[in-house]
Image (cartoon, rainbow, N blue to C red; front, side, top):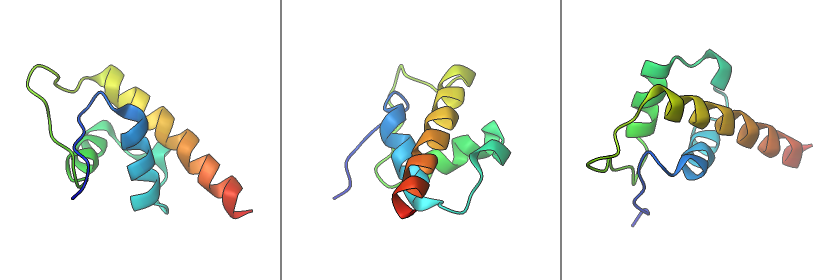
Length: 76
């Protein structure tokens, strides 16, 4: 059973995105698409009282970029 997480777990979301979409360029993903990608992750559940906003999406995108770079460094 996948773990349950919401918008505030930005580090966990970034890890999932980096592993699930290794060929995606986080810089090229628009926030509307990013929101949909996150919502499609197994275990994601939007918590009442914690809706997503632009700041959260910016943070997720930045952490996704970092996570992707870390994974690429591991492969080298």
